[in-house]
Amino acid sequence: MSRRMSELSSPYQVCVAGTGSYVPERILTNEELAAKVDTSDEWIVTRTGIKERRIAAEGEFTSHMATHAARRALEQAGLAAEDVELIIVATITPDTPTPATACYVQQSLGANHAVAFDISAACSGFLYAMKISKRLISDGAFKNALIIGAEKLSAVTNWEDRTTCVLFGDGAGAAVLRRAEPHEGSILATEMGTDGNLTHLLNIPGGGTACPITSANVNDHLVTLTMMGKEVFKHAVNRMKEAAEKVIDRADLKAEDIACVIPHQANLRIIDAIADRLAVPNERVFVNLDKYGNTSAAAVAIALDEANRTGAFKRGEHIVLVVFGAGLTWAAAAIRW
Ligand code: UT7
Image 1 (cartoon, rainbow, N blue to C red):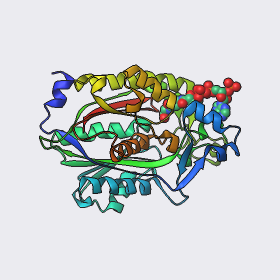
Image 2 (tube, rainbow, N blue to C red):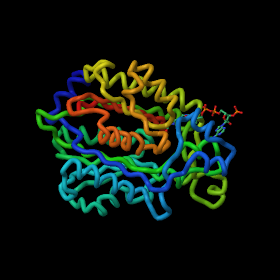
Image 3 (cartoon, rainbow, N blue to C red):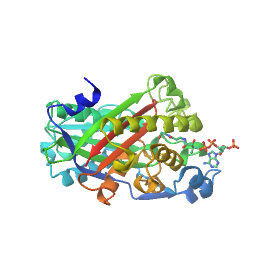
Image 4 (tube, rainbow, N blue to C red):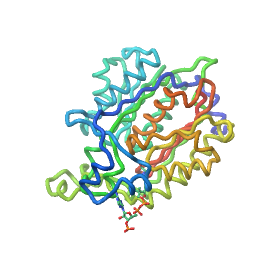
């Protein structure tokens, strides 16, 4: 059976019933960064498109941001926390190594009947969570799922490294997935991929068993994000284009059928290159990285919520989400809203 047939012939179709997002209050501008490291607003804007990013307060953790975003998504979906059956948090900046951040979110929401766990797929995590939960709902194991991308990247940023510290920010986005009624929209096609041969291009080397947290390792900036930006850039464009094309094809769509493409928010030049290769005009590509920078797993989730709430697409229209991140990992989804 082809992948297209198997996705469409699952017992239940799955829709996105609500979205939500949250970003911390504190805005960190390019000018403020230029006062700390050797950079400029002009360099950051022309090379990345980022103008400012949000920074979580000291006592504000990933689970707090995730909970705010989740409450908004639940409210829009009209789903009570106690009726949530599954919570997946995608994050590389969990509150604690264990238990999972999803467990803290379950507690703070009062979602006492949910199964809750985290996944670690960097910037691709939200769409990994979407594919996993879509399959679990369509197979009948769960009736609904709350999926969340949430990150406090400011906690793992080397604030002395101008090649990375200008890129990242904090925030959270969430979506409620549930069984779709026949007249409702549905997630039509999903795709995900990984290339573990390229782990070295983008990683946090320390903090795990390979390089434990010691004061020496912390002082050597081994527990902060490092990236070979140029290499990552090339892979990002190619992998996101391929993943988007796959879901567009499996959903039987053409470029002109897509009301909105929502890509990972890492670099405006990457987004423009993908729009160009997919032949989707820029005005149908959602961008908010100027306000938030790259928030890893949260980025596409926040963008989905903002696009949804600002009317970038309507009921019955088709959207495509596509992401890329450390791993390397990538994923895409085509949805009839
Ligand atoms: O979220 C996961 C996926 N992540 C991505 O997809 C990110 C992909 N990569 C990128 O977005 C880009 O590669 C960056 C924005 C990270 C860097 O842009 P670039 O055009 O690839 O710049 P570069 O790294 O080649 O650096 C060009 C120059 C270098 O100077 P020299 O060697 O030419 O003298 C850098 O040292 O720019 C310099 N530079 C900076 N200058 C001012 C690097 N960072 C900065 C900075 N301010 N912040």
